[in-house]
Amino acid sequence: MTAPMTRWVPSTSMPLSDAQRAFLKAPRFASLATVDPDGGPRQAVAWYDLLPDDRLLVNSRAGRRWPANLQRDGRVGISVIDVENGESWLGLTARVDAVVEDVTRAREDICDLAYRYEDGNPSADSLATFRSQQRITFLLRIEQVHDHLNEG
Image 1 (cartoon, rainbow, N blue to C red):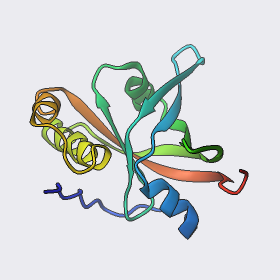
Image 2: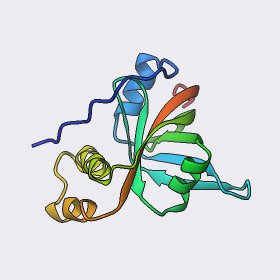
Image 3: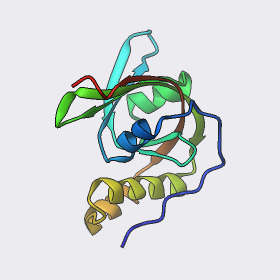
Image 4: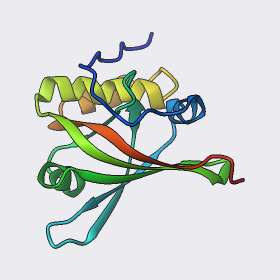
């Protein structure tokens, strides 16, 4: 059984090519780069999903540094790499388009991501853990695409 993905109000993002969209639809890990309050870089690895309107959905436990950075400064650099061919990757420049602070909705978003990343079969324990946490969801509007899919 798979969980239904959320329907979001469309937003204008940079259009992706079919190849870029297919690459991002695979359950790969994203490296997110945000800006700390002192201007320094902060990186984190995260699950994501590509929404039908080409925005990315990312989710985190509330209180972590990278979500706090995104709430303060909505700019984010993202790298998504093909683990089988590290020379094939996409770099994305994005900006926060919406923040979902409703904890119930954000908890369901992380559960949807668990279905995506755990072959449609997350453990009941992991879902229960996610549903007990303070969570936050960001919708990221892609502003630039740096395509390195044909590099390798």
